[in-house]
Image 1 (cartoon, one colour):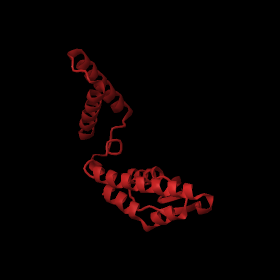
Image 2: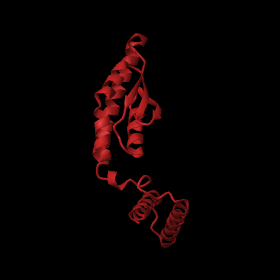
Image 3: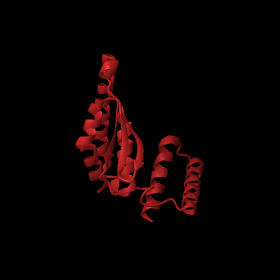
Image 4: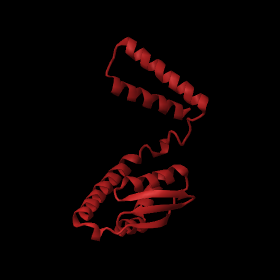
Length: 156
């Protein structure tokens, strides 16, 4: 029930922010569309703890701040190696073990790796991630496990 309430509130806020209209007709059409979406979501049985991860709500802003910082730093690293030329680029592929217990934790970790410029999660198999990096320095950063620890902390 709490997932349904959270979804309806999220849809209402999203609709109001994008609509910008406060007339009775527009508000009623928005309410009808939200009820229709909720009905369809219930019929499809897709409202659960994975589609609405409420337990992550309070921890996400701090994780996003850290991830944005990492993305910016990785951008500078990639630009540096592009400017320095092909001789400084050392592509690498490595399998990295993930310590996340849930599927959503593994997906957040894999997507965080891929969102960081210069690295791509190529394959997920159980708790093993195959990662390609533009430079071996990026793989070494992943092996230290800082991103893995932060995603695991977010997940718990």
